[in-house]
Image (cartoon, rainbow, N blue to C red; front, side, top):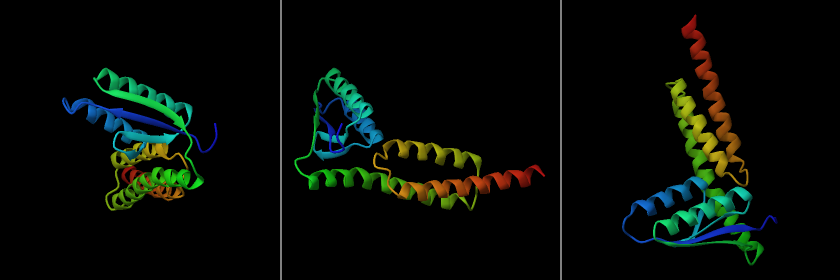
Length: 158
């Protein structure tokens, strides 16, 4: 599999009922898919993303829609870089929000908040296909919160 290979999902669902459209949209968001145009989304090709799009295509068809999956390479290096950038930008925004949340939680640290942020971190990392540098900053912010929570727990125990 070449670095420039992508998996595409082209789909169309009926407007009503809206539940299948919403379910597909949520799954695409969790996968970190980039919307190219209405009804056409892309992800870097790997076995997991290809399988996820194949399953989603089946769901769309079962809901009365139409769907196709494709494996493709952009026509130019510039197009490939643009797709990479779009996939990465969404993850960068999520990492920034996570780091801000961890920083804000330092004022009232709790295990519950820490565990929620760790879950969010794992979810974002699963979508971080190109390992953007902002992931490390977010990881450090969550670790800083973990140290504060651990210290607060020790002080309460004493």
